[in-house]
Image (tube, rainbow, N blue to C red; front, side, top):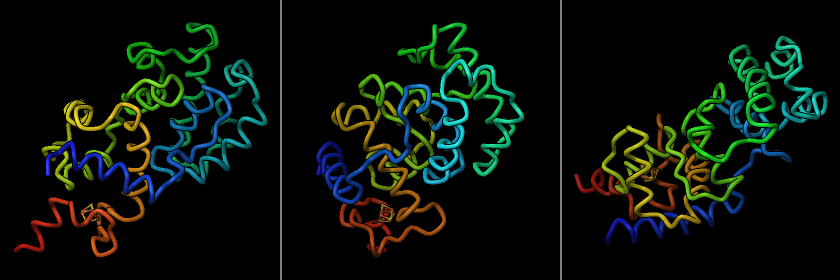
Amino acid sequence: MTKKEKGRIVVERLKSLYPDSCSLEAKKDYELLFATRLSAQCTDARVNTVTKVLFKKYPTLDSLAEADENDIAEIIKPCGLFRTKARDIKLGAVKLVEVFGGRVPDTMEELLTIPGVGRKTANLILSDIYGHPAIVADTHCMRIAGKLGLTGGGRDPLKVETELSKLIEPAEQASLCHRFVHFGRDICTARSPQCGECPLSDICSDYQQKIKK
Ligand code: SF4
C-alpha cells in the first residue's frame, strides 16, 4: 500500500469515527481565533463553556480590545494558563482592531504577528475561515501520523506539514487534523494507545511492527 492510499483510508475511517470534525464553537472569525488560543491544554467542551460567557460579556472585537485583562483572566480561568491566555486575547483584540481593521488576516505572515498565534492556530484559521488547504501539525498530528507510517515520524511541524500535504487532498487536510486531535485524546493517546480498539490498527505501521515481534 502506498502512503497516499493509506492517507485516503485514514481520512475515510476517521471521518466515520468523528463525523463532526471541529467542536470549537464560534460565530465570528475572531471568536474562532481566541477559542483556539484557549484550547491549548484544555478540552473543546470546556473552551465552549468559557467562550459562551466571554463573548456574551464582550460581544464585539472593540469591547474585547477595551476589556480589563484581569476580568478576561477571571472568566477564562477554567481553561488553565489563564494569565497568558488573557494577555494574548486582550493584545490580540487590540492588534486586530488597530492593525488589521477589525478583521482576522488571511495570510500566514500576518497571522503570526498576532500575540499567541503560532503556525498551528494560523493554519487552522486559514483552513476553517478562508478555506485554504492547511495541515495543522500539532503534537497529536505529528505523533499519530508517525505511528501510522504516513510520515517519517519526525516532530518538526514544518516537515510534517510538507509530508502530509503531499498525501492528503487539500479539501480534507484541515478536518483530518481536527480528527487527529480527537483520536489522539480518545484512542491513540500518548501514554496508553488503545490499539486493540483502534479502527486503524490493520494499517498502522507501529502496531503492525509490534505484533510481528
Ligand atoms: S494501532 Fe495503536 S498506535 Fe496505531 S494508530 Fe491505532 S492506537 Fe495508535
